[in-house]
Image 1 (spheres, one colour):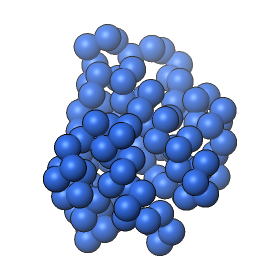
Image 2 (cartoon, one colour):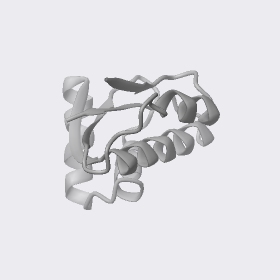
Image 3 (tube, helix red, strand yellow):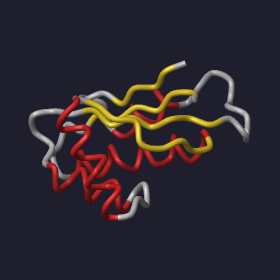
Length: 108
């Protein structure tokens, strides 16, 4: 099952779109993938990876550069509830700053 956080969804839409019909088990793990776009700044993506996903500076910068060069990059596997929560926080932060940031969480 794939959950995509799309460009034009409000935070409320994101929450409803991320709520699966059957809850994920507590030990289920999801992989997070960030996608490139022509508007979200590299500095913003790096900062988001550091603050929301708690990546160290070097790893956040490396991930941002992989996204920029290849179009997308998986960067972490988290328990389902944490992945969902962090994706929602990331999209809210991006929308508040006016960015169309795209991120997805999918079962690992």
